[in-house]
Length: 121
Picture 1 (cartoon, rainbow, N blue to C red):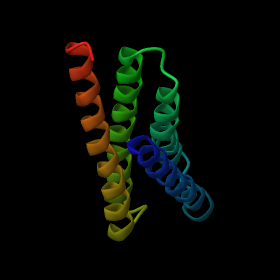
Picture 2 (spheres, rainbow, N blue to C red; picture 1 turned 90 degrees about the vertical axis):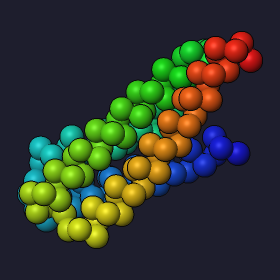
Picture 3 (cartoon, rainbow, N blue to C red; picture 1 turned 90 degrees about the horizontal axis):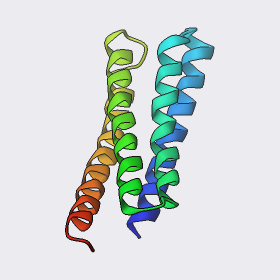
Picture 4 (cartoon, rainbow, N blue to C red; picture 1 turned 45 degrees about the vertical axis):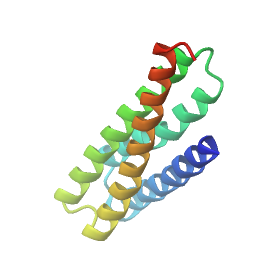
């Protein structure tokens, strides 16, 4: 069940990021920041998908940890886009909220996996 929620939420977040990137390029002629956000924002879900077929619990934890780093990087780019007036407060709040929800889920999953590795479960 949790895996499905991860997949759904991360995919929906990626769609929002792709659409924002398209808008930034076509309407604002912004190419650099939008590309950075596109990379990190879509990597979150891609890494979660990769983790589905991890070779071990350690591999799973590693892929989820990288996804967490990408989510954190995405918040940085979203903040920067707001502070440079490329996106408005509403868009910023919505995207950061979605991303931080993924961050919380990732942290929880990583902690659970690490404790299972530690206790050999």
